[in-house]
Amino acid sequence: MSRWEPDAASRLMKAATELFDEQGYDATTVAEIAERAGLTKRTFFRHYADKREVLFNGSGQLERCWLEGIEAAPADAEPLAAVAAGFDPVAEMFAERHAFARVRSRIVQANPELQERELIKLHKLAGVVKGALLRRGVPEHAATLAAHVGLAVFSVAFGHWVEQNDPARLRALFDESLAQMRSVTSA
Image 1 (tube, rainbow, N blue to C red):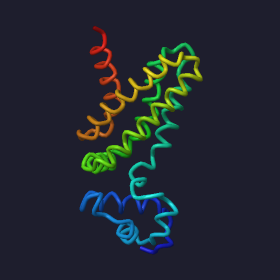
Image 2: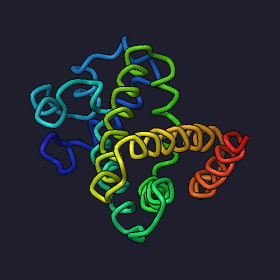
Image 3: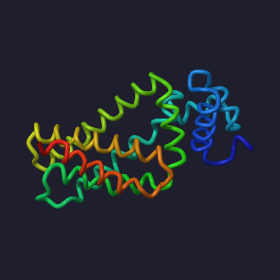
Image 4: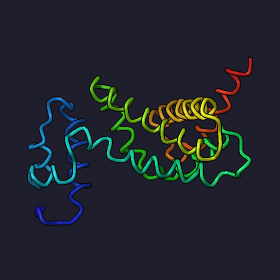
């Protein structure tokens, strides 16, 4: 494959996830990723700050999708209902990414550094969701709680989704996890 062919970022992501899955994250170098993708290290660093970002570069899109759903929620929606309105566009975003999400999850779970990075990205996402709720006029304490509950629901549902074989089931898992959360906290 020519190093001048289009879609270098996708090629690098594919090469990186294959190598991380085959030989482990720590054992994989940027040079190996670039070589497998048929590109140079310089090209790698034009697209990604470091090899971790190959696995986390979709976080901005996740934030935008979730915000889109919150902003589309009815003005009188309760805070958690507004947060849950973000599940629709998020599920759509992941509709075609099940195979990648499964491999990515396996890679992240095998590496404490990546687990830490995942927690940092989720904490940032909670702040973004909280900010959207504050803009809707939700009091700060309620916005913080709703954002973190929404992230917990997302994380649990997503974890179940990557473990099973039905890529179309993510949206239903969000609803089931939200219902379970409500059941657990109703007492």
